[in-house]
Length: 401
Image (cartoon, rainbow, N blue to C red; front, top):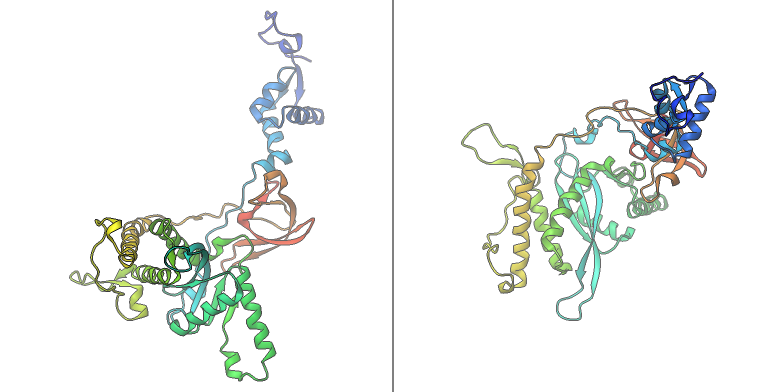
């Protein structure tokens, strides 16, 4: 059976074009024709696929079949893979429990930053890093400068932090090699000296939490935001200037005071009270204030001494922070709806940032993990190379449910 359309008088068209064969879209032969044409046209979209099929055939309900062929093609699914976005989680209990500042902290590294090993000519440029400690309860920030990414350097920075801010009871971080190495060193020390150390000292130890899944920095959004605040403005303030180690510590300490001067809420409801509640009230009982210094914004850079340039960097950082921080408060939070979820035994693709989509590994969900609010955000995936753990932002469902 063929279609008797209005093209009978078109002499330049072939007989199949003027009178295409009628096909039923639910027949298995029609499905094979559409799949073969889809591959022949290098995985064309529904519109091009249907137009090419109608050169010879006239499928009844062909538009829906063309869409189904395109959406069920495995290769096309992998090329347009979309990750799952769960609902934004509730705040953890440590952020809602009252306590002293820096009782529970999150740690992350920023850098590298170029630093000069000494003043004058012939100085050598070395890489240094910034260790950031963020308080869970007040969002206060403590900054330490470290020379490398070894575990010993992190332990030294942790000792300096504890000596000035007090010993935290909980430390949260990602699975960086420095943090994992420090955790293992402290664990080995406690195990080897459990008989000689007093019981009270062991009971008062610091609890490390390396609970973030791999390749999921957004799970540590609290300290990642602190890294963003420091890096975004500091790189624009420093520019190509290579400071010495001591000068970097001075600038970073002043930046720490600026970040801890963020206004949180009005201190009282009195309209005559213009003093806002800042993070400094939680740390020292009053706002953090800097020593008075002259304004250098309108001065020529060549006329300033090296010490005055450091003060100019601090003033530039404060100017950028005061202008851009308030505007960031206007933005609403993301992930306000739970788009979809992954089920057990679902076939998925593991998203790799350094590989093209066709190289992403196939896997099957073997376990899912939910938070305290019951929303699944992490899953175990069985692949050809073993079982891996990934968050939903790295998992693309291969076939939609």
